[in-house]
Length: 248
Image (tube, rainbow, N blue to C red):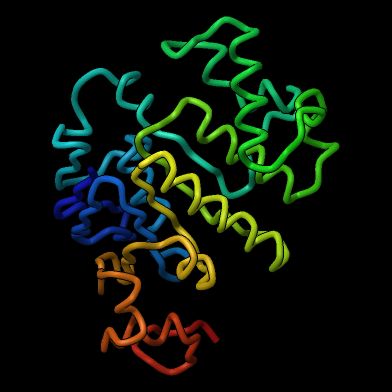
């Protein structure tokens, strides 16, 4: 579904991506891991076209991501943002139905509200949440609302940016389970960025380790612990010593 070939991106003298090659099969869940500042979010933004790579090619379902109808291209994606990114001034149901109330995916208001309430139910929130505002919700509930919004338009591809950041271990487990269930249920292709190794084990089919601007290792999550790759081994086990230099 997604293929990145020799993607390079620099900001001034800072070479963030130095030839990223990544393949995400249709209907699978890929998790990208790596330290802060290694370019995980930049890689995601390159796929969406929010950042233009300096060189290389990106295809989505065989089509060049840089060409064609931009609105139709973006309509294929759903996104769960790291900080929730809910609109404070809108009630929950309008946050969930945001894409269904405007643009090419626009639906009648009553229909959009009904879909929003159904998606809220799917992530474990009752209908009375629909008319509340984000500030009235806990962090875990806000994350669920963000997940409901990500799936509201039935996207083929869903991106999850640090889905469990700021959540306690129990709520993190709930969100991980929901993500896995929904991705399987929808048959969607998923790409997740996370530091949380519990999330990796819960939601990944495959993982990719990004460091020094390239994919150092990629493969099935079941092979992760026996990869033999020093970068991956140091990262997943939190070792201070290894090829990844820590700032001291």
